[in-house]
Image: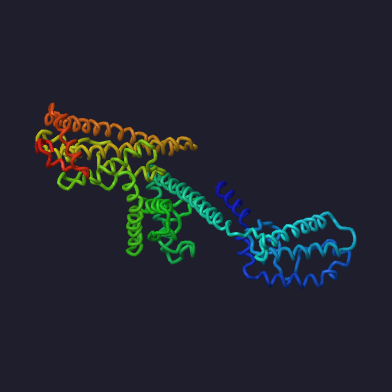
Length: 487
């Protein structure tokens, strides 16, 4: 949050025209009239010695927050000329009042007068420079582009800070829920049942504090320091960030997992709706994890429907991501959990290995009985599985390493240990898939050797001759001298 605070402070310092427009709007002419009126009566206000203690910046009809604005000196490019004129006239009034004050001036008064004199000169220079009638105007509009860029950067900074906050609360909900389930679940059930019974009595002791079964569950099941409220219990929309949705999903999971309550039919349906809503919120993070780490190609589709082109494109992207180190990241334990669940269901990581490899057709059939296309499809599928697993392993390892540098609670240590074990299981399973990759590569290599024998150089010369004849690319399938089996 320190970064966000500094960003706001810098933004306000550099582009105070936003503040000026918000404060002054179209009231500059009105305030100019007030200052003109004060100028006419200035000598009368300060002819008595008692007036020395008065604040010469006070002007009847101009609010204090407007007066204070005039003491924030902006750069000339940022403030419209009419605002600068208003500030100049105000400070001229303060200086005139000081000049017309009789008697001994105290230190505070001298500071005000000195400040007014300096700002009067500065605002006057700024007004002259930015005036549309000035030949040397500095207001060429260049500041606007920088303003937009800074505004965008500030929004990104704020969004990052907000996402970090939601991530913190989502993790706190996980820690709370898991702690209750393991240690205090049935005690909580008894307390919730007693609370519900009191709430349903005619003499409801909670009054307007608890108005629905949802607010009752939140009151008892969500820690007080986590800002999950009944307002969060609604369907998501496009304006919500992924971090916000993850936070709400963890809140709904907490309510649904811990809300063991025999309520009446109406309340029971509302509790059931929480489960429905939980499923709706789960779709977005599930889809994101699937897109980031599991790709769009079904590696277990039968050879006749296997998309070879899409698979090769994705495989090339994975190899480049692993080589460059620029790949999807894991930033929360919720994302890690989604990866674990899908990995278990798709690849049997951590459980009996082999069923998916059977489906790929590499262990239940003699490779010699497989067509070239079937064998290549199996190879590409296996390579995709290995590549995806390596992406997940790299991302999870980086995430866990980051978490190790945070203050270590008992829960966090337990979580890190669990996910390190999962990464180790994934690594061992990946090694088994890699063994099948090598097996497929060996089978394909043998087929090339058997098919080409010692004729590889001869076939290469035939193809080069065709390419020379057909400069736009020879059709090698019509090349004389190359058997159909080779083609």
